[in-house]
Amino acid sequence: MRRACLGTSYFLCLLFLSVVGAQPNAQFVDVTALTGITFDHHSGATGNKYLPETLGAGTVILDVDGDGWQDLLFVNSTDLPLTEKSETTAALYRNNGNGTFTNITANSGLNIPIYGIGGTAADYNNDGHTDIYLTAVGPNHLFRGQGDGTFVDVTTEAGVGDDRFSTSALWFDYDNDGAVDLFVGNYVDWNIDNDLFCSLDGNRKSYCTPESYSGQRPTLYRNLGDGTFADVTATAGLDDPSLKALGVTMFDHDNDGWIDLFVANDTEPDRLYHNQRNGTFEDIGVIAGVAFSETGIARAGMGVDAADYDRSGRPSLLIGHFSNEMIALYHNEGNSLFIDEAPRSAIGRSSLLTLAFGCFFFDYNLDGLLDIFVTNGHVADDVERVQSRVTYAQPPHLFRNRGNGEFEEVVPDPNSVLARPLVGRGAAYGDLDNDGDLDIVVTTNDGPAQIIRNDVPRTGNVLRVQLIGTASNRDGIGARVEIELKDEPTIWRLVKTGSSYASQSERPITFGLAKTVIVNSLRVTWPSGQTDVVADVVANQSITVREYDGIIAATPIGYAQ
Image 1 (cartoon, rainbow, N blue to C red):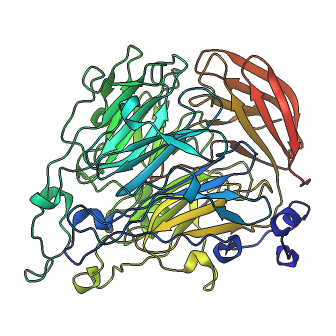
Image 2: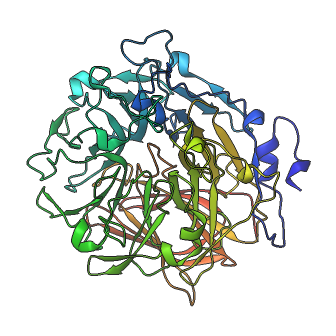
C-alpha cells in the first residue's frame, strides 16, 4: 500500500495511510536512492593495514534547524597523517519534509577534514540550538549550532579538543546542575609511528588486534556554564588508562535520579560507572556482573544501549561483541546485579558468528515492547582465509520482543534489505518521515550509508514526546518519561544521547501504544527533581512538554487506529 505513494510528497502521503493486519516478516525498505543521500564513508586505507581503517564511523540523527524534521549527520574519515592524498569531511543533510534530503555541508561549518569516528549532539549552552561534538583520531571538535543549519568551531575556546584516539561520546548532566557535560570514550594508544606488524598467516600483514596496544583513559568534561569546560576525569574517579572504549551509553541503573555510565571496551573488562552523587563515579562492573562474559572472559565490546525491554522498571544492557562471542543482553535484576540472558536465547544463537557494531533498542512495530536492531560487519577483510564460517560483510539482526522477556529473530525475505550483507558500523533510529514509526540509518566501512524505511504494517497507535527543560538542561537529557496505560505496566524511556556505536539516535521519545487510544497519564521526572504530570493524553500526536508548564504544543501524526 505504501508503494502507491509517488512523487515529491512521497513520505507525506504515508502519513495518511492506514494498514491493517500483521505480517510474519518485518517490512523494511532501502530508500537511500529516493532520499538523495549519496554519502560514502572514506577510511583512507592505503594497503598498510593501519588499525583505524577498520573502525568506520557513525551517524547522528538530529534536528539542526528546529523545524520538527530529523536531519542526518554522517561522520567521515579522511586520510591518516603522513598518508594524505585526499580530503573528505563529515556530511550534513537537511530533511526537506517530502522524503528527500539536501546536502548542506558546504556552508555548514562542519566541512573540516578530520579522521572522524563518532558524533553526539545536544544543546550544551541552553540557547535553543543543537550543537555537535565529533570524535576522531585526534583532535576532536566541538561545533556550536546557530539554529539555521550552520555551525561555528569552538573547540579551542571551549577546551574540549581531546587529541587521543576517540570513538564514542555522549552528553549528559552528571551533576544535575542544568548544564550538560561531555563524556568521551578513548580507544588505544596508536599512531603511525608505533604501528606494529601483525599477521593472520605469519606472512602478509593484517590488522592488529587491540591487545597489541595499550589503552587510554576516557575524558569527562564538566560544563562550567560559560561556554567552557573543565577536564575533571581524575577528580571524578575515571582516570583509568586501561580502557579501550568503543561504545558508551548513559542510564540510571538503580533509578536513583543520577545518571550512570557504561563503557563497552575492546578486549578489556567493561565498566559500569555508578554515579556517587557527589561528582565522582565508582566502577561496579565486576560486582554487577557486566565486566566479563559468563566464562570470565573480557570480550570485544563494540556498540551498546540500555533500556527497560521487559517493563520491569529497570534498564537492562545490550552489548555488541566480536564474532564467536555473541551479543550480550544483561538483564537488570535490581540491587546492581545483571544476568546475561543472551546465551539461553535466540539472541545468543543467532549472533555467534556475526561481529556486532551499532545496536539499539527500539519499538519497530509500535506494540509497546522494545525490539532490538544490530548492524554487523567484520574488521578483517581477509577473515575468510582463516575462518571459513565467518564473512567480512554480514547481514544485520532484527529481534522482535515477544513480551515475555524473550526475543525471536525476524527472518527477512531473501530480497529484503535486512538480508543484505554489508560491512556495518554505525546505526541509529529516528522517524525520518514524521509518520510515527521509526526508520533506521546504517553506515558502512568504506561504503555507502543506508536509509531504511519502516514499512511494517501499522496495527498500533503511537505517542511522540519531546522535552524542553527550564531548570534542567534545555534538551531534558536524563529525564525519565513515563506513560500509564489502563491495566498495563508503566512504560518509560530515558531521554539520552550517544549509545549504539559512535552514533546517536533521535532525541524525541516514541511510545508504541498498541490499541490504546488515551494515555491515562504522562509523567516527566526531570533532572532537577521537578515532576510534571499530564492526564488523558490522546494518542497519535507529537507533543512538546516544557518543564513546569506541561504540554505546550501538539501536532497530529496523521494516523489513527
